Every structure is written in structure tokens, then in C-alpha cells.
Image (cartoon, rainbow, N blue to C red; front, side, top):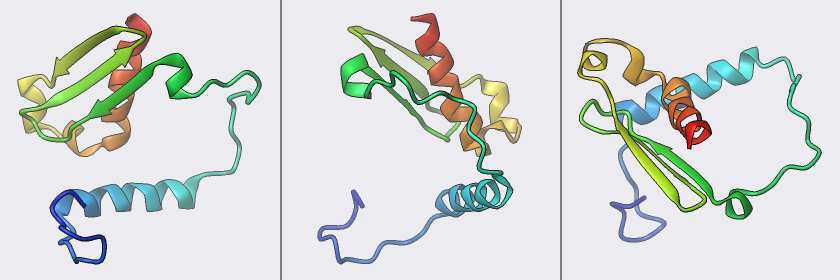
Amino acid sequence: MKHAKRPFHKIRVTKGMRKDISMWKLFLTKYNGVTVMLENGWSSSGNLQLFTDSAGHSKFGCGVYFNGAWTYLQWPEKWAESEILSDITYLEMVPVALACCL
């Protein structure tokens, strides 16, 4: 929506957006409804001060902010020639792992 001047303006759906939607469609059709994480004691990102983000382009990477500390990881060059950058679930997990290191 950042390129649309008004919420009702149309935008083009990119190839990357289509890949994301396809991944979610596959996940939702295969998900068995079982979640193995306990819900007791969950905190919000704001309370934890934990924020992550990933970019699926080979020139970018991911970033993490956790409780005053932050880090950034540029994707390895060899990933540009692989399918890794098209797997958004993997790319979103990398900064979570970095947050654990922080």
C-alpha cells in the first residue's frame, strides 16, 4: 500500500506477493490444527521489545531489535543463486534465531 495514494486505489500484485500467497495457501491446506506452543505467559512484542523483519531480495537481509540491542544480517551472496530467498518462512525464521543470540 505504500505506493497507493489512497486506500481505495488499485495496486499491482507482484510476483513476490503471489509467491507469499501461494505459500500461505499451501500451509493452510496442510495445517492439521495442532499448535505445540503453550499459550500461558505470552507477552506482546511491545512488552518484550522484540521486533524482526526480513527482505526477500538478495541485496538485503534481515534485522532484529531486542530490548535495546539490534543487529542486521545481509543474506549470503550464494543464496542469490538458490531457492532460499523465495522461502519466506525460512527468511522470517532467521531473524528470530538472531534474536535468541541477542
